[in-house]
Length: 438
Image 1: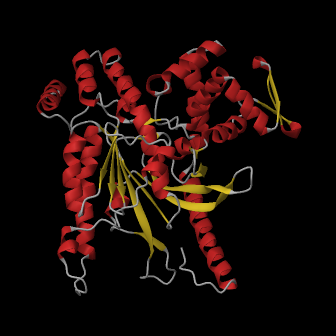
Image 2 (image 1 turned 90 degrees about the horizontal axis):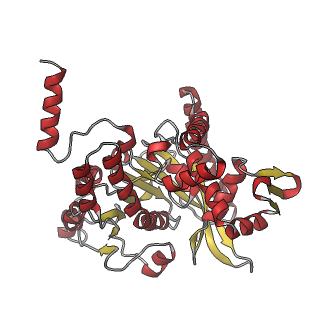
Image 3 (image 1 turned 180 degrees about the horizontal axis):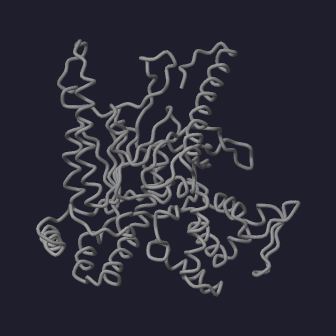
């Protein structure tokens, strides 16, 4: 036996099996896109579209809303991403047959499947968040049981046209056993329901990887009554904690007011508790407007200032001498950038490069916004390799934490959540209003 025999066995396995044996190539194994919201891009370290993701939190905190926004982003960006990967097979792997088949398999990958077990989907609000709901881009599944819904879903995923599945929610999904039980029966089906969900996640984990179709799971939050502290726990058993590549707790911070002082949106905090594709324990604070969705312009402005991509002077003054820009105040800065889309795209491309984890990918070969990077190189007289190297160094410097620092960061996040729950309970006690602790 020799290495030659191993390579022959690997080649035979690749030929015989459609999935399961892949060549080790970090640039193609990590499938990510850059979202229009830089806060969410940073939170996820680039959104992985071949994984299971979970969000959980109190009621009316924005869980379904955030995932609906991400689904709309996938509808817009997946065709370009599929073409990028096909070109990778052609130009890097020199495999035109594989590139042709890849395009054929995923040429219509723009459909979102929404498993609406709660029966609360609002098509008008979803459209304002950027989701297309026509027959060519959307399917709403309101099945009676968990098993029935996923039986309908599986052939849709295998068709290659689905770009995303939203499972809303695991707590509301009724199993066959629940549906057949009588009202008032003393039998408890909780363990069997959790086993049914575990089977769903186990099987869909394979589908997500093989057909590049992420599942966004919305979980409700319950108090854990088995311990004195009554810490919150998610519904649906423990399987989702293991199969989800990212787990995010979403909470409502405050209402957002428009210029007239009226409530026109909500401010959310998305806190990452698990991330297998990037750096965990990050926070993202979003402003979500009811009539227009997430305001990405203000988020980009914050990161442009944070990364010092323009000159920040005292008194709220900003300057970009190369482009002849001088502004006073954020509002004027936003207006100037919107009036100069070429310069704005250049800054956004730099922000996106800096937000991604440098130790996870090579921006020269991987960045989905490759055309933007080339434009930056053209305007700055730098090569793509130089821009990628600068971005990688900056990202590595940000994420080069020791094990002790990561542990301290995790303890800090848990302590902040505990204080937040105590403050909520104390405020309610002062007002003589009974409240269930978070």
